[in-house]
Image 1 (spheres, protein in one colour):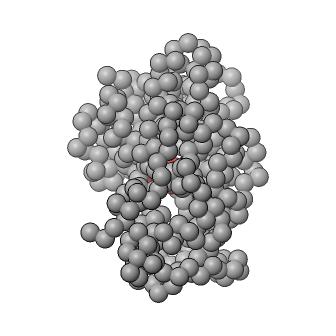
Image 2 (image 1 turned 90 degrees about the vertical axis):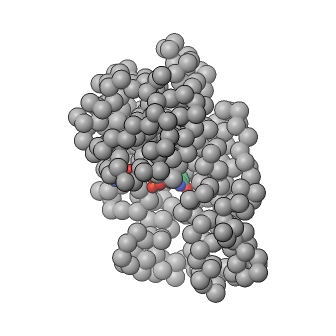
Length: 322
Ligand SMILES: NC(=O)c1ccc[n+]([C@@H]2O[C@H](COP(=O)([O-])OP(=O)(O)OC[C@H]3O[C@@H](n4cnc5c(N)ncnc54)[C@H](OP(=O)(O)O)[C@@H]3O)[C@@H](O)[C@H]2O)c1
């Protein structure tokens, strides 16, 4: 049984990636900052949990010994410039060096729609700029030392049971009479979490089986894949849909109030000051200066023979009130 390490395996997407990897016959190792974060993974067969600081390069290298492949899903949505740099840029650099040192042959890295490995600095937010720099670290290393075959996946917003997107919009509408919304007209192409996980597993299978021949892997599949669903929605449409599918206001959802930019920034600033994880930050607003839809310039899920699922039937199942 081949071993794979999934960084960020305890998260929303990571759990589905781990489940599909186990189904596909991989022995999965998940490093986590605290075992309790990964409790949901313990029923999976052959799962090994490791309490590890993934930012400790020596420890990461040591724990990667014996693994054929790695998936990196570690990311943050909010934070300081230094935090984005540590998680989205320094970690991919360390991971690449660790893979080389440990002889890991395949690496799938989850980035985000709107990030660019070619011109990362042109992205509108710290989140997207740092995501692009992380991609560049893996796809265009400054030296030519041989390393793992790398594929970057750029998903649009991801939906599925436990998402912090449609679920949050549905919960807010259960308590608010009207939805004040920043970025109401920004367009998204939501992708089902299981389609993203399927893409990871498909890419790994191709990397491991085709990658044995140098140069063959890149010819067989693209280094960057955009993961998007079949439909484009504005944020306002998604918010309304979440309320309707939850059955709020007799299935009509709440009215959406599109906020002008200055008010959206003020709202985000206030949310940043509130205790706990903010619902929205000014950097999140900056990310929404561009649409979150496929550019069409790189491969999509169809290149992996994945027909992405539509949002409504799946979201209806998990948004419905119990
Ligand atoms: N969710 C979306 O809609 C969406 C859209 C586009 C792209 N993506 C990308 O998809 C990937 C997975 O997203 P997700 O929604 O599954 O994220 P998530 O639920 O927040 O999970 C991220 C995982 O990373 C680990 N982590 C977080 N901060 C860390 C830190 N400072 N140091 C070390 N580990 C840390 C956590 O593991 P432990 O707590 O166990 O250590 C956590 O389980 C990310 O790269 C994200 O940018 C997500």
